[in-house]
Image 1 (spheres, helix red, strand yellow):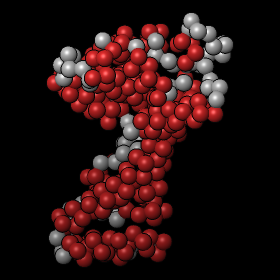
Image 2: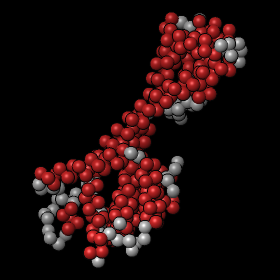
Image 3: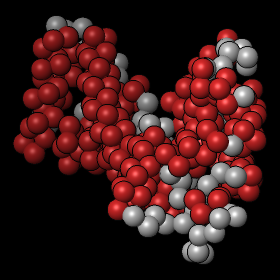
Image 4: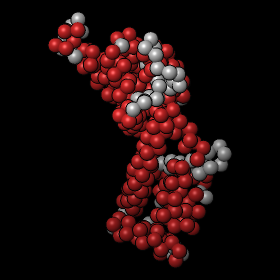
Length: 305
């Protein structure tokens, strides 16, 4: 029982490390391609129309959110959206009367008909209350952002899975093989348990520490590989005196390849769940481990001792 908990804790720590490394890689890619900023701009173009989006993005508040390189923002606060919409698109201040707002909406050009119809529906629902209209604008924007966030999360999860699978295949990070090795190697198991407990005490990586933690995890995985974690590939011939090197060799049978591919896919899927998920699992396993006494062995474990 105690051994199995330690094995699960070790595997969870590896998933956490891999998730953080792959997430950092995906974040670096996102900074380069700026997909979320482009998706946000497209979403606002869909709801505001081409001209409305141009007027919106030319507002001083939105201009102030641009990156140092002058690129459009990837996030816009809700209140900022309302002010920029009313002042930039409707060409009037936030304060005033609903009659003024409705006249501005009715005066929108034909190419902004989609925006016009949406705003007229919100005006009708506000029933002459300007504050309620502004709240409706915020809700409208938040609903659009929720859809964008859902799409972006699904897209990111697919990318993280792909990156995780590539990393797993490149470095032979095979969940099945790692599980089996941890079940056999008590020293490796103890090293991973120590690493997991240290990470729990340190807490989940936040903010600017994430890059340092990524490098820290890479160093830990390298050290664990030297201790006996079967990471990486070996092109040498199998020998009886080097079991770890043998584990790093490509499979030689069809069933071996089936298990290898399955193990790599399991790692890729685990990585796609994200580092926060695995840190939460790690915490829960450590709590369970603290309630299990080392002397509580299963019948199989007692027969081996």
